[in-house]
Each structure stands twice: as structure tokens, then as C-alpha cells.
Length: 258
Image (cartoon, rainbow, N blue to C red; front, side, top):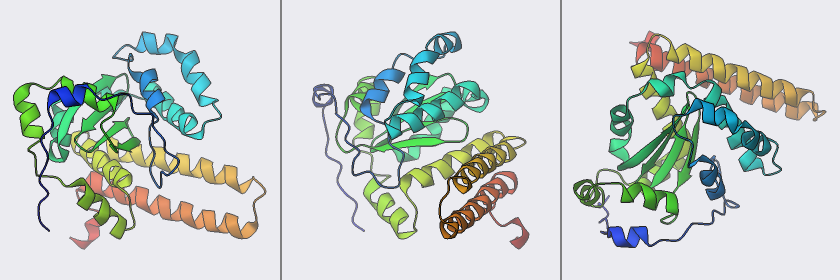
């Protein structure tokens, strides 16, 4: 496949963009972050006391009628309480993790890392990833770019090592999504960094969350055939969690085959 030419964009053009009013009505198979939630996060640095003082804001989001905000708030809340792995990472490690994807910049919060790359951004805690593809140049991305020095800026917009469109197309052909692929990537990187504890901690968290979700659905009064279907999905997810655990612990998904 012919390599796409990356158009050079000036910092002035980047800084001139207006706030992107996120519309995720067409979102499919991704956890996306509405732009107004970025405003909620922008002042949250490494300051657990401040986060605790702002817990009412988070609680309001958790009880929001907006399903996206509700889910993201739950993710953020978990990260605030359980930020041990994320908080132990060095800034240089985060940059190195995402350098192959056209790393731009990142910000740190208590229990969270918010990373901007050339084509997408993610927020991750210990065990979950919130993903957003850049459909255009939004304010958060513009701010991240504005903090780059000139040499890194020129290198970024001449970077040809990663084609997001090809990555997205390949994920689709493999019946997955960029969001899920990047979540697996982050899990692998965490496992390499914390091999003695992270793989099993992630598996236990994922298994428990899946178990609770299924039990709740089982009691919802849904048709038995649908409950049976969801049970099969749960079983499949359990196998996936175990596979990622094996990859983290042994370095391969099927250790018995080596």
C-alpha cells in the first residue's frame, strides 16, 4: 500500500481552531469522550485532595442521564481510587509507549493519563481505556500541539510510521476496533512494566466487572434465550481476560504451545 503523504500544518493553524463540539451519535464500538468532559478534566493535575474536594462534580456526572458521561464518570471514579499503577509510571515511559503512534503530548492526573497522538487521543487508568479518534483538529489536540517544541512539531507532521486509516481498516477486518486494540496494547505495556502483579490484578478486575454485569442482566427479566446468549458472551470475555493474563505473565497468549 502506498504511503500517504502527511500534509504539513503550521502551529498558527493549529492554534486558530475553535472548540470542537463533539457529536458522537454515529459512534460505533468505541468509548468516546465528549468535549465537555474534557473541560471537567482540564484542571485535574496530580492533586488527590483537590479530586476529593471535587467529588460532588464527579457524582453528578455519574448520575447523569447522558450515558456517555455516566460511563466515563464511573471509569474516572475507579481510576481516582485505584491509581497505583498509573501513578508509578514515568512521563518518559508514557511517551515511549505511544511514540510509534505519532505521540504529541500527554497530561497526568491522579490515577489517569491523557495522551494525544497525531490521529487519536486516549485516557487510560489501570485497566480501562477511553478512546477518541480525531475527526478534526479539536481544542484539546491544539493545546497539546502548542506545547511541543519546534523540532518535535516538525518531526510529528512529517511522521510516516503510522497510518491510522490502515490500522482502523485492519482492526475492522479482524473483528475488533482501534479502541480494543489500544486497550490490549496498554495492558501489554503495563504487564511488561509490572510483571509480578499487573496481569493477575487486571484479570481479577475484568472478571469481576463482567460477572457483576451478567448477574445484573440475569435479574433484569430478559427473555431466557437472551440471557443464555449474554452468558455465552460473558464466557467468551472470561477467556479473553485469561488470554491477556497469560500474555502478561508468560509473554505469549498460548504458553503451552511453545
